[in-house]
Length: 93
Image (cartoon, rainbow, N blue to C red; front, side, top):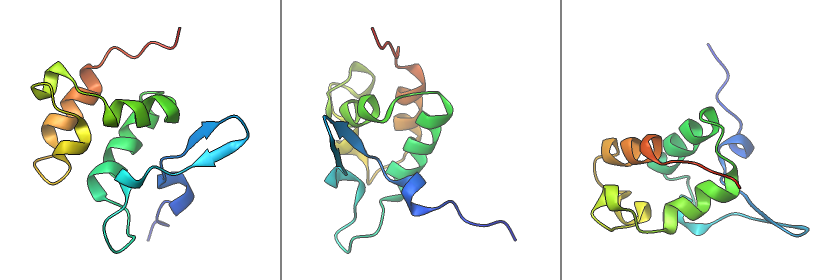
C-alpha cells in the first residue's frame, strides 16, 4: 500500500516576509482539509504554480468562473475549478 501524502505537503502555505500562514479557505469546519482545495493545490504544484500565487488565485474573481472566486465554488463540482486553474495564464514577472 502506498503511503499517503504528508499533511504538510497538502497544506496551502503563504510566505510573507519571515512568516508562514495557512489560509482558512482550505479547512472544513471540523479542521480537516477541504478535499477540493487539496486536489487543486496538488495540480497547481504539478503545474509549477507558486503557493502564494495559488492562494491569491483562490480568492480573486475570474472570468472563467463567471466573475466568481474559486473559493465560492468549493462545495460544487470541482471540474470547472480545475479547468480554470489549468487555463489560467500563470506569470511571475
